Image (cartoon, rainbow, N blue to C red; front, side, top):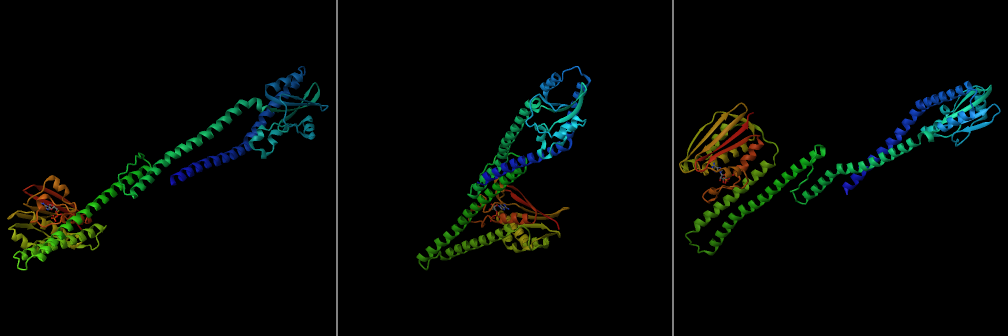
Length: 461
Ligand code: ADP
C-alpha cells in the first residue's frame, strides 16, 4: 500500500513539475517575445513593406494589380487603399478587417503604421498569429502621381503551416514520452523500496534468510546492503538464542535429573544403606555445578550486555595474576603441577573484578585440562601498545576444529565431557567477552595431547 502511494506521489509530483515548468517557461518566452522579438518582427516586415512600396513607386509602368497579386500568392496578406478610399485585398483574406479610419488616413498622408509592434500585450505570443488587419504594417507610397496606402502582414498560415504541425507533434510527443518515462523511472526508483518493505515483513515474521537482489551504488543500494547485513546479524543472534536456550535447558536438566534420581533412591532405600553418603556427595556436587553454572550465566549476560566498561580503574595485572595463582595453589599442588611465572609490574585500564575472572578462567582451565604432574607457565610481556599475558600448559590440548569452537557458549571438547572434569563450557565465552570489553585480543595455539597456549593482549593505559 505504501509502495503504491509513494509511486503515485512521485509520478504525480514529477508530472506537476513538468506542467508548472511548462507554464512558467511559456510566460518567460512571452515576455521575451513582447520585449524583443515583437519589435524585430515589426522592423523586418516594415522593411519588406517599404521595399515593395519603393518598387511600386519606382516602376510606374507595372500593374499594381499584378504586382501585389503576385506578392499575395507568395505569402503575404495585403490591403491596398487608393486616394479615393477604394480597398483592394490580395493574398488570403484577413479574419478581421478592423482598422480605424484615422490610421488609414495617416498612412495615406505619409506615416508608417506599426500595427505589429502596437498589437495588445495581453494576447501573448499568440498575437504573432492574430490574422487581423490591425496586426499589420502600413506604408504610404506614390504611384503614377497618386497616393496609396499599403498594409501587409505575412501569411502565417501559408508560411508556417508545416512548421506548426511539426512543432505541435513535437510538443505532444515530448509530453507523452516524458509522462511515460516518468512512470517507468519512478517504478525503477521505487522497486527497491518495495523489496525492502517485503523483506522487513519477512524478518518481522521470523524469516531471516532474505535475498534482496538490489545491485545499486546509490543510497538505496547502501540501505539494501546494510539491511542484508542486519538480517544476517539478526539471524545469527536468533540462532545463538535458540542454541543458548536449548543448551541451558539441557545442562540444567541433567544435574536436576541426577539429584532427583538420588533423592528417589534415598527415599526408598533402607536407612542403613552404606551408599547413602555417596548419594549425598553426588547430589552436593550436582547442586554445586548448578550453582556455578547460574553464576557464570549471570556473569556472562552482565558482561555481554555492557557496551562499555563501568568500573574503570588502573589495574595491577601482575598483582591480580599473583592472587589468582595463590587462590588455586591447592589444586595445583593436588595435581602435582609445576607452575612457573615471571610477572613484572604492568598496568592496564579496566575493571579489576572482570580481569580477575579472566585470569581465573584461564588458570583453572590450564589446571583442569592438564595431565597429572604437568607444568603451567605464565608470562607477562609489555610491547609499545599492549600488555601481553601468556598461559602455557602441557595438558590434553585441542585440535584445529576444537580451537575454532572453544569460545562458543556451552562448548566442551569431547575429552572434557567426562564427569571427572568439572566444567560448564561457559568459561572461555566469559573470557572472550571480557577481553572484547577491554578492546583486547586472544589467540589460541594448541597441539592435541601436548598442550595449549592462550595469549591475551590488552591495550596499555
Ligand atoms: P569448561 O567449563 O568446560 O572449562 P571453557 O569455556 O572454559 O569451559 O572451555 C571450553 C572447552 O575448551 C573445555 O571444555 C575444554 O574442552 C577446552 N579447553 C579450554 N581450555 C583448555 C586447555 N587449557 N587445554 C585444553 N582444552 C581446553
